[in-house]
Amino acid sequence: MEKKITLHDKTFKMYIPNEDIEKAIDTVAAQMNRDFAGSTDSNAPIMICTLNGAVLYAAELLKRLDFPVEFKAMKLSSYEGTHSTGKVKAELPAALGDLRGKTVIVVEDIVDTGNTIVAMKDILEGMGVEKIIISTLLLKPEVYKKDVKLDYVALRIPNRFIVGFGLDYNELGRNIKDIYVLDQ
Ligand code: IMP
Ligand code: MG
Image (tube, rainbow, N blue to C red):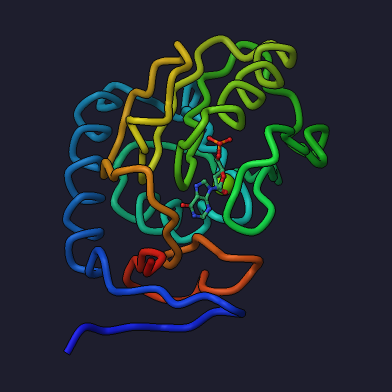
């Protein structure tokens, strides 16, 4: 029988099992390990996890990386319920410290309209970051029409609302280890 869960008023069905997510992260981590093989302590890139959704992806990715890398986080939000509000709220960019001349790897849970990624890029450019690299666990290619290059995409999905592995529906579902899709 198909596995289903209920969060608030909505039912979701099993979509991407944890082992497929982990395999996709293995592939991205292997690519990054090749691309950053020359990284040293003095030019270590800074991974910036977008809170809250990317926290599980960032943790899984980070532990697979074998080059010197720093880790920070920044809170951004644009979703209410199951839809994007179109406005991105950013909290505490100052807590990131001095990023002038640095290479930053942005770690995002999912790129949908791309508003979050564009806002993040603007903030980081404004802080003097030299090189911005974007990594996302998931991408909805049918929705994403911005021209910011996505350097690492682990999984591509159709335009459906999903939860699990860090992603939420009104703050619930982040703790589910598989990804579930809205059942309708
Ligand atoms: P964007 O700014 O429209 O690209 O949306 C990005 C943010 O919206 C992501 O970081 C998620 O937090 C949230 N989001 C987009 N699609 C989904 C989804 O299917 N489930 C849960 N959150 C989503
Ligand atoms: Mg997010």
